[in-house]
Length: 251
Image 1: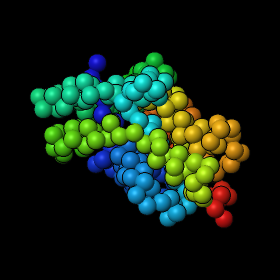
Image 2: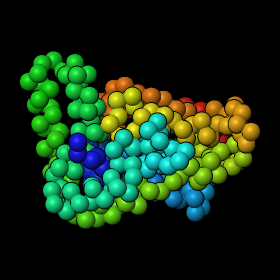
Image 3: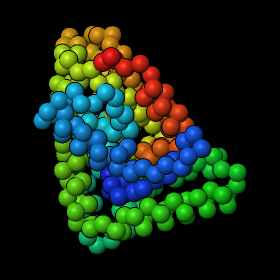
Image 4: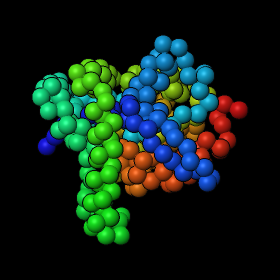
């Protein structure tokens, strides 16, 4: 099975989402894997105060497995130094194999083809969409340098953001940022419990009791995978807009 590097393709991808009859373009990186660590790095160095609301999509606070962090939380395939070394070697010799593995892991209808085929009117429609999506994301990925993709993922997979998240968003942090965490039951990258760990960690106090604050929400979607916003932009927009236009914790 090809190793999937979920942050590779969204770094460059441009997707289209329909909203209120308009046609908007947005950078997938703004919703996916690599921008989330950038935001977490900002929080760690500065604060959360400049953010009123944030949405984190299908991203665990740690990709690699650890003593206290295993199959229920980490990345399904890229979860160890050994897996990273294999991915980087494949990027050097056959980068398309990694890119195609990424696409298959990030699009739910490809990762779970039995379910995926049921989302289309016919087998031809399924195959046509799979071919078009794969060609699009592969073309985007081939614009970049495989070596630097590997370097980015080496930093990304090993970084443990758990302490930063609890320090900056937890019950004693004083943060007023509203946070929506979206996980997917059909993600080929993370089991839902990985991303949703963030919600539980933020809402608990030092003794492990629920502190009752509702400014952090978690939801598990079933309409798409790691790139759920691409697979069903309408449902994703409805979910995001309901959160973004709702009451703010800090106001």
